[in-house]
Image (tube, rainbow, N blue to C red; front, side, top):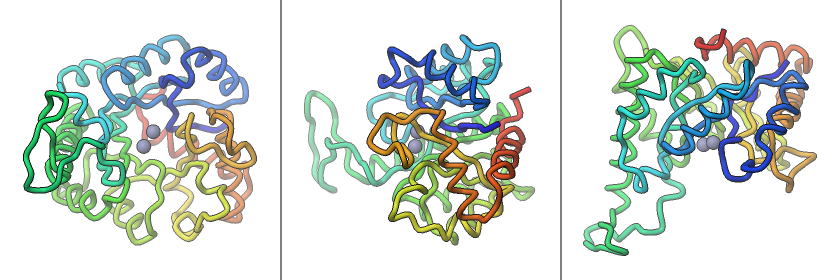
Length: 277
Ligand SMILES: [Zn+2]
Ligand SMILES: [Zn+2]
């Protein structure tokens, strides 16, 4: 059994065959969490989960790259979070790599297409504001968070450490599609986070040090499909079935058996996503 802890069958790429794609994975013993990126895809993730009696779950959240397109109404997400199939909040986080095209230089003012255009600093601040609202919702609902971070680890760690409570970080979660250093991973582990890896680990340029050093009981696997298709299917659309190749590469790099990696990563997912019966 395997657990694809981060998939997007709720995205357009699967518009015509999300049902068949999910069934293929379920038949192979793979469970799935479809992760939202805005209110619309979050609702779609819940709708898909409702179609299956078990094995398909949802996470709801506003992706940092979409904070400018959607005015966050946290109450809407709170409503969705109460659904029995919603097992996490996400994806949420910080992404400084892919700031929107419509940014204006610092200090300049402007409007484009009738919209107020933000500076990079304003967008980063908005991302942090949205993230904090979801962290608070996480404390309130006791749901774990699925966190996306790109080119923003210093700010994210700072924000999470400040949010931390003396007794430890209540809103536990996972750093998804992790590509940071082991030093960064260690700080997330100290905050109570798990680390999740995608098909990127099967690419030739992947530096396996962080994965090799992270204990297996802190690791989960995911596809982030339709993106990041692992070898040997690179170039094709990714799907939950291919999470097997991620798990196999974890086993190779960590010098463990595939069966052990499958067992432990699935246990880790069940431990984190407690709403799953
Ligand atoms: Zn992501
Ligand atoms: Zn994703």
